[in-house]
Structure formats: structure tokens, C-alpha cells
Length: 139
Image (cartoon, rainbow, N blue to C red; front, side):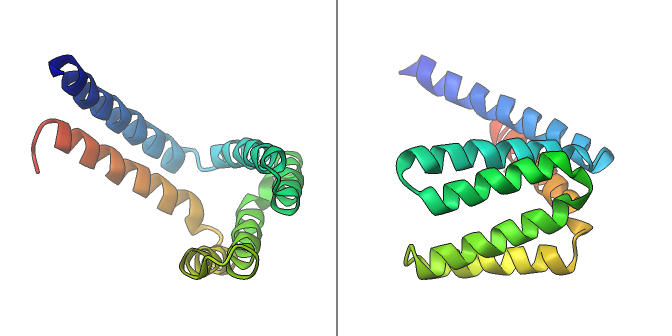
């Protein structure tokens, strides 16, 4: 039991350090997000497709491939993807709250495309600091 708690705490420290490093890299080199999101969208689409979600899976795979081929349009594609995903949650999955939040984030990214990398990088830096702080019991 003691080993499990120590391992869990060390795991939180490692996750915090990795999130902090990823956030700093993302803020310093915002174009790396293109390849990360493209791969993530393709993997998510494959999982959805295998699980039976043909429409969201196909849309995710197609947008992921387009994202990898045309990396300069990453922010608009992610915004469109999130908006479509939000509509899917609202109308086909009956998840109103999740759908509205996802749709809102997608529309915000479409309107302000340059903030995506910096917001995500800032979130990762903050999440890393919180995880490291929890490990060292700062708060």
C-alpha cells in the first residue's frame, strides 16, 4: 500500500514536469501543435470508427489528414472540428452541456485563431505547476 501511494505521487510529479515542458515547447514553437493535433485527430477518428461512430470517426480522420497535409490552417481546422463535434454532441449524442462548451470553444478558435497555441501552452504550464505543487505540498 505504501509503495502504491509513493508511486502515485511520483507519477504526479512526472506528469507535472512533462506538462510543464510540453507547455513551454508549445509556447516557444507554436507550429508543433499542427502535427500533434493531426495525429491526435487521426487516432481519435480510428478509435471512434472502430467503436461504431462512423460519422465522427470519418470526419476526424479526414480533418486529421488535411491538417497534416496543410499545416498552416491548423487553427481554423481545429475550430471547425470542435464546432462540428459540439453540434454532434448537441444533436446526435444528447449531451447538451458538453456540446455547448465544445461548440463555444470551436467558435472562439475560429474567430481568434492565433490564441490556440498560446492558450493550450499556458494551460499545460499551469497544469504542470499545479501537479508539481501538489507533489511538494505547496498547496
